[in-house]
Length: 298
Figure 1 (cartoon, helix red, strand yellow):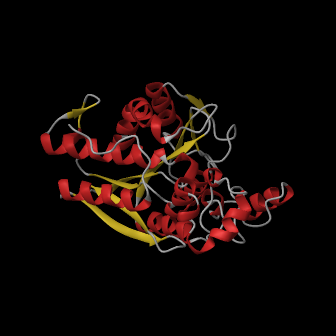
Figure 2 (figure 1 turned 60 degrees about the vertical axis):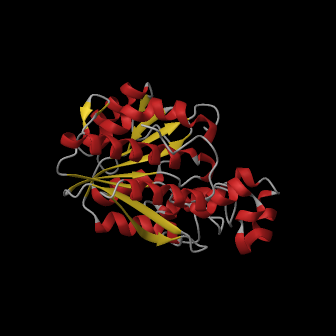
């Protein structure tokens, strides 16, 4: 298969073109807008399959880890190719393995943030003055949305408690990272994923993040059945460490999902010392390919 997804930076427009190309090449892959960002950009969900057993994959909430968007799109591309041709992926007949299963992918939850981190001033829209002041001109360090709210921290799980903790650390107003917002679900990006999760009956959530080369699972108030075993399998095939629920940090999306739905939510974190970049796409994808495939069929 000749992939059309390469290890080069992409603007939001170019990501949209990649998605349009995928749906044109594979008519059984559907797309829909689940919401719009602060600046009005579409937040797109791709759906593969039509069963009632649904798995959700989320990437691109952290603009510094933009490569997660390309990892998910590359995975979608390979899945679709192998389904069309009846081929195996990582030893599995994908067409048979996914029978009765629906996969939903949200590859770029924070398109505005990605545009800021990649393009700098041209990506800041009408907020360019505020954003440049907040980040001191270091746009590549931007990890929030257009309004300076870190998306993962804007979910309602223990929001007041975490907000108070962050205030003590100085995160009291919009910032390149760390500010959770004035209230939970204040941001359209957060609200879009919140709404999607309530509309679909999701079996489990897989979130791609950066910072650690480990996989962790959420467990509050209790650990959902099979969560630990799923994490152990993913960790084994990706050669990642497995961390228990309370020996981790910055997995707010997964924590909220498990708390809200009592269902497994796993966060796959890559990059032990540095945040992986787009140039690392092929290396990262090869390492995560089998883990993502197993995550789809658990």
